[in-house]
Length: 184
Image 1 (tube, rainbow, N blue to C red):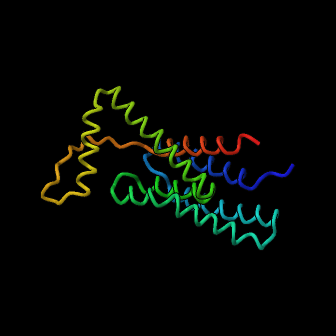
Image 2: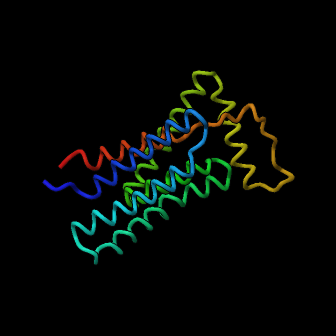
Image 3: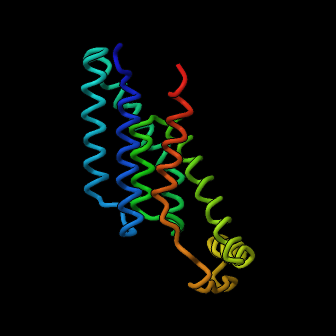
């Protein structure tokens, strides 16, 4: 039985996300060489898989799908990155998810990642007894982005706890992949 190209690409995205998650947990960074190497590997593998199955004529369509996936999955993370709500490595990793999974499954993986990460943050704040401080700080940060400078309020750096997001991206990718390709 031939292996479906999207399943191979999905497995590669899971592997890239897993390496990024481990690295992010250890160092707080997602290496650019992982992202660049993963992107190259995804594009080369996609070209090989599509060529072997459908011929050279289908390669531009497959690569266009990857480009659309990158754009779709990079749009919200770019906005969050510019608002300093997401790191650059997380932005690039989410874009890679769009390249390998396509726009729809990539966006679904992103939704799962943000939902699971948000649940973690709220759960951690509840455990630490800082839910209201966290919600107030988050609201102030968001409001400061849209109000005039004279109306902005100061937010204590202690109230802003960074979250290593790559593990949640891995969880979102795994959830989306299982949801889409576990049933025949």
